Length: 128
Image (cartoon, rainbow, N blue to C red; front, side, top):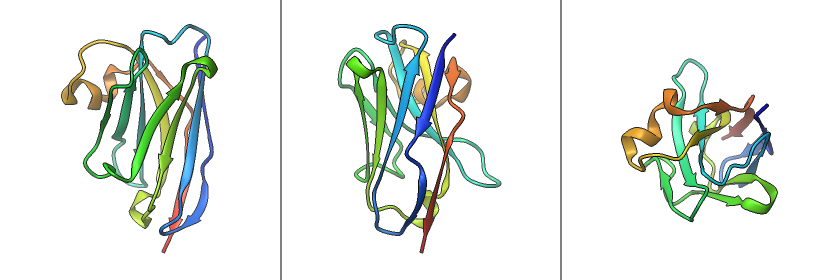
């Protein structure tokens, strides 16, 4: 059974940094694309960043480009999201997701329905 477990969320002040972790288990993820999404209250879940498991290819939403960094540790089956210069509008529940690697383009990576597995989410709250 595939499991994705996020951790690292919390309450921080604007300008602070956080690192989220997502530990994947239940299969070998060497052929999977991993991604982070977030959902703020009253809003739809939105794509944040993706990393291809097989190489270092990454892709970011414009809203976080330059502030957030996605990375992975294959040996630990773990994906990270380093978030710098946090803003109050970054407040949301952050979700880890996994999909079998396929086409690598913005449309495919941003589509929620294309992901096979989801974590339970971790809350990030940024105070002003």
